[in-house]
Image (cartoon, rainbow over all chains, first blue to last red; front, side, top):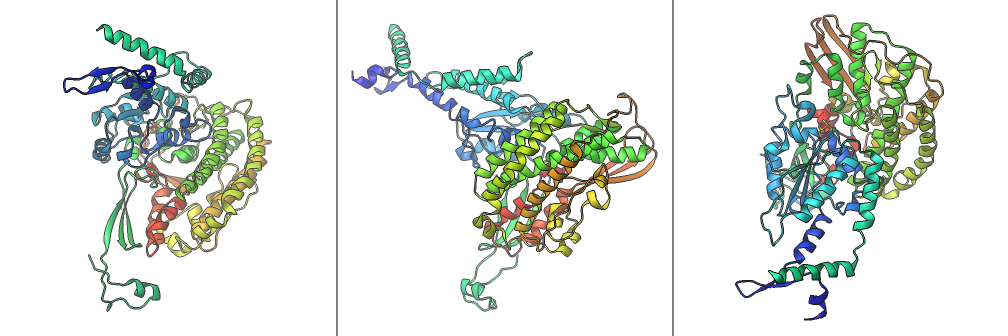
Length: 224
Length: 386
Ligand code: SF4
């Protein structure tokens, strides 16, 4: 085999039709998917200021997590951040937006409104009590509005889910939705430090390690 | 639908178009509710003839949350946090509007410290709101840099608020009877540091946008709104002042400590997009002046004058009062039947009236200018729908 097939983290697998598939590329695909989420610019109310604006701008800078390419068209986006209250009149539009997005698509519900109706849970005659009544949600981020740090915590959770989730080898495998609430006793500085560590760790790919991991993986598969 | 007949030549020369051999048809375009430049979920139905806008009709209700109705189910202090979510960029001014009407009606006492703190935080938030508008306005015109600059400086005020109030956006700070917490020991120091910082950044804003020839050429002469029409449509705030009407509640009916500070009300001349831009830039400077005058003279005293659990009873009748938010006049009408919950509450929000000016501004203009006009009004959609 050539240089590429020896060093690339992957394995050639014969399929019934006679074709071959480089399956460990799965992981690579999931890794790149998780680091290049393109959010849809969708915000209905107050949470949009924190979720779409403050996180995108100077101090918090969503670009560090590869999710800064906000797209106005759902056809180009793969992350729907539901930032704000959804009312009955908007609900069909939200469903349409979701259906217009191409697979694989991910949904984050940020803010109490998108989770359960938030402050408008009682006595409001228009609010939808939670966006998950309309579309499936992957990650919930609580808060009213969540801090940008809390949003990033949710984003990192989603990235983890994508990396471990559905792949070519395990098609159709979706994780159950998770609540990305900040753990008890965690301070902002802890989160900031964790994000720093993650970034320095994630942003540098050690090619030798990756190749070794891939070789190990293919050896395991051969034993099958 | 009437069919408007014209040719390009006729439109350029302004001749009568009725007899032209080529016919164009008017058509409709839906803008929103999912559109990056409608600042939320506003829908505009546009009637266009080629590139010319013939009519703009806003369609509302995509974020109607029933805040006024919800107000009838809680007591007065429970209504305050709901108005945070109306015009979330002026949450403190909204709090103040409700607080003021309750305090006036129930004849509650306040002291100078409370009023000074309220004035200070409201002016800081006016700066914050205009910073965000400035950034988004730049983005709507096609430049991304103002967005970064505006939000970078906005974060500084967020930090100040976070220390004192504990929130970045939805404050729930100004309450009937005082303010929720006393100011943080660092408040004065932080605000002074911010003022020094922000004053050094204003020239940067000017160099980037105000003195930019492209921006000036882009904004001058489009979206004109005459003073008569602005008054007739009920526009308030910078939109009204840009049309040349020097109406500012902080001057005409001073509340808080506004009567003790010295500031100017910037007014425009022709009421085009450039005037609205300029008025807001000037307002930021005036707010800096107000904060500067007050920051060293915060009187001593208590900051909350009623017991936290006290039931506030408002005498039966109709009560009204209003404040000047970053976008205009927010009036709160309160109908009370003497109980501790409002019988009916209505908010006269600035954005609702300001939005209807878009029809006046855009009709006859080009569709390419529409986003600039909409952005120059600076709307917050949940405030329109409530
Ligand atoms: S969760 Fe709170 S901040 Fe977010 S949209 Fe709802 S009311 Fe606004």
